[in-house]
Length: 435
Image (cartoon, rainbow, N blue to C red; front, side, top):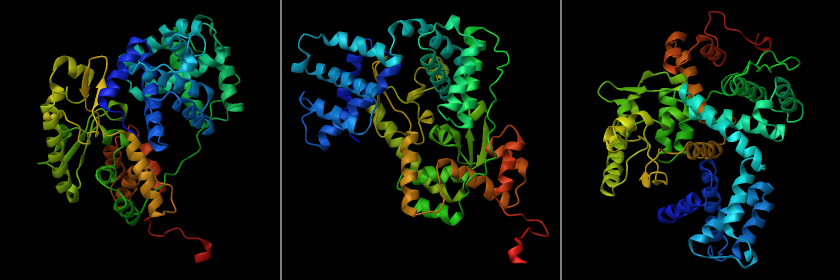
């Protein structure tokens, strides 16, 4: 995929800010610009030639992109053209600013009046999530369900919403949308939070809607041979990522958020701060990968030195640390263990910062490696965590120890792994065919 040059990205973001494109929509505008530049390079089209835009939109249509997405991409490229004072001939008589204003209203809800009336709702939702120190992923999930709920209500003002609306929406999800049990329960929890903390209303009992029960799930577990086979198909840095996922039983998000100060190399311990549920935990580092960890330290040190020489603002930091220690992002011990290859432009502060390796890049690399290994099992990044727990249980580690290593609040969550290993009782269960 084509990477947007940093200088061009800076100019593009400046245009988006000047045209008052909402903050939450800017990543989508950057995405369409990246796709457009990649399209032009692949098909030898001039990215600054207005005649390339219709072909790009046709390509999106051929790929079954929705009409709102096509419209979003169209107007994003118009903003890109404005950087170079390019104005397509078919737009004569239409001010580009008006088009962008029309776009921003249509992107959020398709209804300008409903966008204005619901804006305080999303602001309060974000504030309530932050006050409770919930993760950004929780905010993303809850705001997504509230937005779908808003669209389902077709412009109904928030103050007029009733519990009956929730009942109709949940029924719509289950009957017409055929969503999974986990999605249905997530929507229920999001709207429960919305009613209690945003609208200030008592949710009460939603009669006639049965909360879906999740069926018992036995996780996929890989053998050590299969894990080694996958690792052999991965290149740096993804092979080291997988070694930490399996060797320490980490969630993918935890692994990507590791900083240099999470390591205690002398004691051979890795400490995870603010894991799922804002819990901290420690686990032993695999001795076999200590040389690779040491080499990664040197890689990070080199990248950190280059960033300092270029005058960047360092890495992204927690807001609380950022306020207290303004230069913390430039200190070595706060650097990401898996830094991103490219710097990220922050238009709000007018500076470059370095993020960590993106989750999706790791997921894609693992998927390719699993396909190349031709395994008979479906494996994802989380499968290595399941394998870690199951292999510890198989090695006769007690369930309480495994619970603490995984960071589970309830031992019943850890008990699922008893179904992934063979029984070690004196009289092992057999199939009658083997009698």
